[in-house]
Amino acid sequence: MNYRSLADLGGQDVRDPIVQEPEGEHFHAPWEPRVMALVVAMGPTGMSNIDMNRSVRETLPNYRELSYYEIWLAALEKLAVQTGVLSDSPPPPKRVLHADDVMAAITKGFSASRPATGAARFALGSSVRTVEVQPQHHTRLPAYARGKTGVIQHVHGAHVFPDTNAQGLGESPQWLYTVAFDAKELWGETARAQHSVISVDAFEPYLEPA
Amino acid sequence: MSEHEHHHHEEHAKRELSPLELRVRALETLLTEKGYIDPAALDLLIDAYQTKIGPRNGAQVVARAWCDPEFRRWLLKDATAAIASLGFSGRQGEHMVAVENTPEVHNMVVCTLCSCYPWAVLGLPPTWYKSAPYRARAVKDPRGVLKEFGVALPESMQIRIWDSTAEVRYLVLPRRPAGTEHLEERELASLVTRDSMIGTGLANKAP
Image (cartoon, rainbow over all chains, first blue to last red; front, side, top):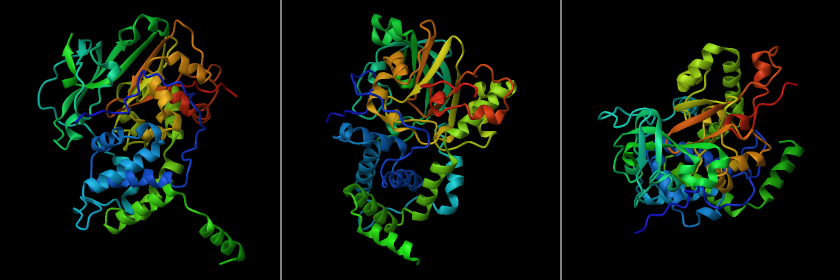
């Protein structure tokens, strides 16, 4: 099976204009806020994790044709079916978000940081090269930043590793870094005029010493 | 029930529900029946993100940083803690980094892979932030994107793009507009736009 994310858009040739939106305009159909709230409220139930959600969304065959909340809805439906939540004998939810807990749950959030299991391989200022592979599962190294040389600009500690977490293979925490690239390294000489530096947040398995 | 309310009710019932609305209602009903969802919690979540958690939170953070050098240093060093000290924390703001615009560097934030956005300080992302054109172009043609937003920066200024590809969330600390020395923190906050904290805009000029 070929895993293909349709959400990895960085650097692609998309020419439609960017449609601006005033502050305070949140939704464009009456069902949209309901979908937002359903997705948030399903978090604590343990049906899926954030990486599974992203993986299901980015592989919806019609991802590019759907609006953002349509993507969220379709992925939620798919996960609810896949996990048996809509079956006759649904697995019991880990926790149900009740009205009384809403504000506390929002303020607490879900930290992704975990104790590190080993020392960080890279230090601030180190040169690194990103791996060039296209894994057959969800990953968070964008295609435009593969096989490129950059510099470690931030060491964030160990975080949940999306690549395994999305597959239900556990959190296997990995060191997380901010890696900065010159625009020319990513896009070639023509990008010189942009005079820009682009960074991604990359997990240690995405990196090799340069 | 008053005449007016009664009429309103009937109108509502007559209105035809769109296929999407029917799908969402069906899913909500099922998840409620299976014991996963408390519909009252959904109402509160929607209210929280429509009335309590939005870019006015971030604007308070920025205005404080403009007024208080010690807070600014703390924000740039440990944004999560500094922001939490003003009462903003949690969901999609668990790991915050603040990046400061200077005369030499302009910062801009994107999530090319999905829609990662600092909800705790900016609320729900605008549609364009989640859309293909912004996600595709912000990393490759940031100057073109800024132009679409009406922002022209000197060629000598570096544009620094932060692609939020993990759970770290970025808040841009825009430059304080000139001629605002006399303004109080609350007045300053009103000049801080949502887009200036994403990096697709600048703070508004003094009134």
